[in-house]
Image (cartoon, rainbow, N blue to C red; front, top):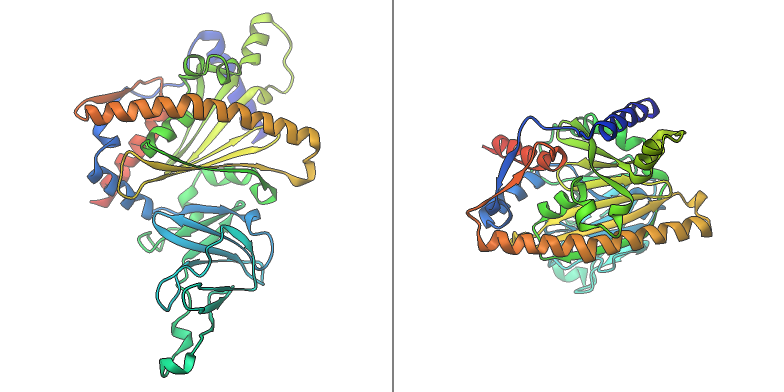
Length: 382
């Protein structure tokens, strides 16, 4: 990875010196209706349900009995670390009358009890106890365990496969060229430093676009991120379904212009690994930003954003914590005061004129990728 980063650094320097950037073959037009049409959203949800999806990080369930709950595409999940160190994922649905067996977001418990009628389940999903059991006649407890969900723990993330996903698709094959890159971040060693969940009146693709857009920092974030990140000089690595974008930090451009010596040039890069369809992994010196953006189930004008800052607990000094908090302040300001309001404007305009198209230039190859890949997935559905 170090050798590759040196190569990317040289490509970035070439772009900065020549006023260029990585280019797509051509511009593309994306119908505004793709952000507003309910039928289009329904097809996207079909695509989502056919992919392995990252539901949690490994360190969110660090020891046996620890759990988190999630709602993934309308499926309530209970994610539990097992006694043997593996992870079990179950539908958070009591096998008596359908209540949630755990209503908390996270914690540690020896077993789980549905608050409706008191049925209890072990951490491995097996039925533990049934109040008034004698009144149910001959009850085969083995047939009333929690419904399990196929899962795999890889690179510090807990992935699930819903029933619609092809059963012969391995996670390693799905990640493809992105597999090694994700492994390099050592997420399995990182704890959640900061966790933010945000509901937005924005189509999910607009949020994904904004997170990987390399042209807007100097304009939309002129007084914030735009002072830190160079606009318009980027390297794009096409990784099949996935992709990785690299941009330069402004101080690299300043050093080049001044003719100053540059040591360890890769430290002047910022990157975004996009795992199709809805995940971004953005490394920084002190932490990793981990984004997942989830479509609303029925309203194309809404989405749910989950942002985590992950950090190495062994290196978490007060000084490092202060720097991470400053990073969150910068991101919070950029996202909640600039990116999200702009995306809400775009969403409103798309709804008002769904017959128009949005233009993604050849110099916007990172943002083109999501839409082109979704089109390929649509073709595979037919």
